[in-house]
Length: 529
Image 1 (cartoon, rainbow, N blue to C red):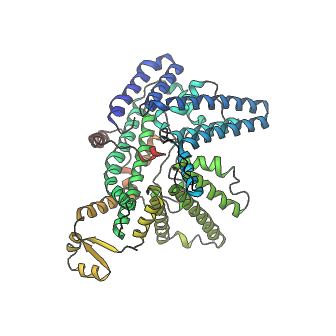
Image 2: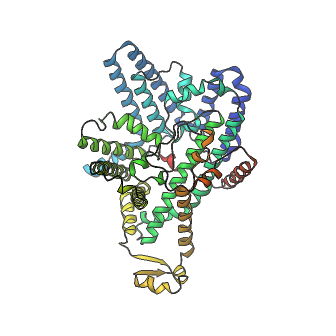
Image 3: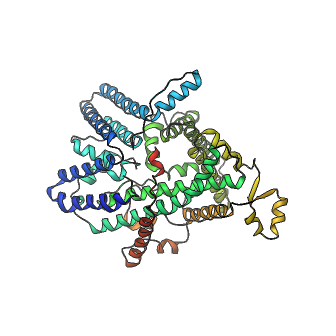
């Protein structure tokens, strides 16, 4: 079941809410938690009942291991606990590896060894990447004595709570269970409902109107590259930038809808997305994009590898390993590995530059507006190049698009566009730009969509800023620099949500646009991972 579907919006969500607050909650926490677990399992099984047993089995095994790890910690049995933790992590990664990477591994073995091993097509269970990482974090925290859970029902809710089950955010047990056990959670709260509906509606609009609206200009370019077609400069850049904006509003929309749905129940999820395209460095980008995944990779991969405690060389290699694993987590393909490797390299260069910057005391000169804009431009360019590998169906397709973006296949624009430049058409021709028939509308609308969505991403307040007075999420973003690309304080004040008639009308309008756009339901991009 998708957030952006009639079944979820008009049936599942309102029924789950109504039963939770007006029927079940009067009997106390345990029945209320049981209802949410049941509803969440129905939500999961709606996609495929086949893998319902998998997530239940995974929860049973990890719950049992978590109890044992907590007991070992309490008894001071460190060695036995570490061995059990290793078994638990290996079992989780083994299941993830089989479903997600077995075919990828076998196909590469066949290429290298010139063999012809065959596996049946393995369908990736929905959300396995997210609930696997979430449970690994729980096992590690239980081993450290940070958290423990003695009721399976509570643990099941931590894993399966439907707003964050499918594509995150990746949450910690200690962040969620205290909220579910609060007496306030059992009482219907009109403020939470209105805030949740507002956030959910904004997210729905981002997904079905903005992200799906520009998707039709991104997909044809990547499909053309996959079919071996030659792409010119403006075609390649149009496709790359269109996908850059599609992914932004798709993931931002999902994150808002997850936070909004949870807030209707009085539950706050961690912030997972905070205007990443405003970042002026790649490290800042990763503090804004998929924030809970970045937190997981930092706390459970980068720091255990040694972090920055064992010299610069080790630090940079740890960054590279972490990001390569992060890339591979997103998908079983060399394009994802390269994407992760690129970001590992970006981060190493970024931190190396910061060290030089600090050593030479260049702080004053690099705070000028021009330098900030240059830093933003370089960061954005690096991110767009990375997204090409992230989206491309294979390595040759990614290279074909990058060749077009670099101008190797020439510069060409539709003749209909060139004619409308008037006297500048000759100048364009002198600059080496050629003209072709047809495609004028496609070209025009591609770049109009890109400009409009880039303006929103860079200059408009995001959902968390719009809802700033109502604490939409519990881990606020902390930036190295202020959002220099934000519009004035006047716009900030005008764009702050309040429970007023004006805002009610606005939310109603964007909700109507969202609902009317549901005729062609599309999956969220992060559902693939």
